[in-house]
Image (cartoon, rainbow, N blue to C red):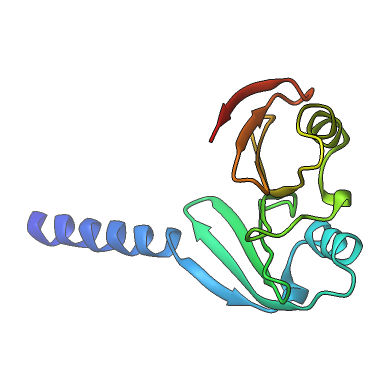
Length: 146
């Protein structure tokens, strides 16, 4: 009887882990969180969503959206952007926080942001010349990597 109980527990644990880590699931753009839909409509009003993916990993959910202009955006479960990759093209100024825009204009005149990510309140950006810059939430440069 004890062997059957142990086997049952093992099966339940395996099924539980499988259900908790579903992975990437294609979704319709209409199924994105409201904040993500609003962001897309305001920042990329005339750009079509090519595909949207819901990535479920245990208790965490993230979304990944590819646009017809080549931009790829990752959102957290609330629909707030985490990473915007322009794939080498300039991102619209509306998506770049004011403190980041100001620092780029002052320290890197003539350059544009092609990729931006936010991590623990800091911004990681990539400029059109390939320079990667980490900024604090207040716009202070923390690190530059070429």
